[in-house]
Image (cartoon, rainbow, N blue to C red; front, top):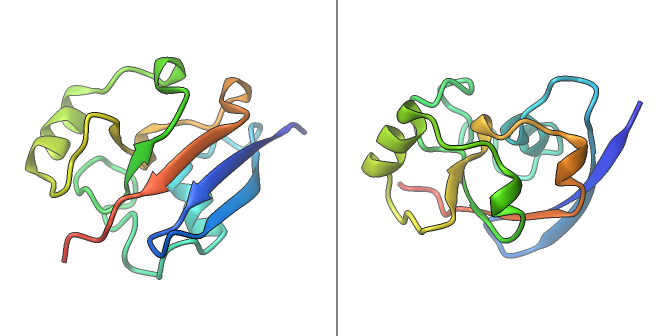
Length: 111
């Protein structure tokens, strides 16, 4: 089993450095939910299908290491609020060993 360290800044601005498993086929949204870093029902509403933007995060580093955005992710971000150049849907970011040290900030809820 191999865990990596990821720093996630929650919607209140608090940084959490957590261990994320690389051997469980998880994505970043699932890790955020498992550590309860966003109120239940406010992130990953579509279940990780890139059909909502509730899991939008700002990538603070490692942008070049992430998989390219799919057409579905691009389309969803085009419809989302508060999108930045470094915005990604966390459900589309698989947890891999290469992302050790990743830093992300959860985007504000678009209520």
